[in-house]
Length: 232
Image 1: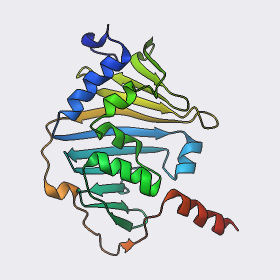
Image 2 (image 1 turned 180 degrees about the horizontal axis):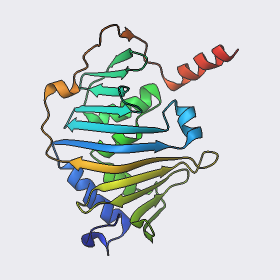
Image 3 (image 1 turned 90 degrees about the vertical axis):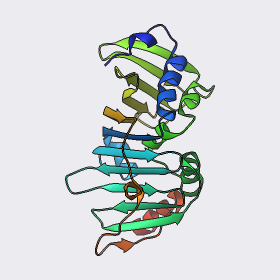
């Protein structure tokens, strides 16, 4: 992987802002990728170590994320600007919550109300470029190595390293949590973008499977409290 020649002499912030402008300028877009999570981090987050992920979005307020760790299994997120639905096919359970607004407000709402958001969803924020270019990342650099040229952004507890494809869009991204023991990582690899995806309302509508049970959508504190009670 390497950066297109147009990026070669730019600094990391300018290079990523160019890429982000392509993403935010697309009304309908889709993304497929392979997600890999460090084992200890996967266990703490309740995620499989490996999954194939598909994301489709219709700006400003529709997005669907599906993560499949194995054939026939998936964890899905649906959002239509009015409600959020999470579905786990392996457990055949779903949870819903009323939320209104665009994708940016969804991201903020997930963090505020539930204490989590899928890392991949930040790439669909309208200010994703500005986030990495902000002062929160104190070191921004273009790195050349055996794996190709990448853009590296370092904050106090997080490092984001992105490799660009020939289309100028992220082809691989690695998040390193420097603030956690062992500096675990989440990697998005083999990223394939379509900035002219043909989508319909059904792409973002949850259809309840037969026998699926409804569960409460808990925040991280409630989940930790529930697990601690079970341990006792």
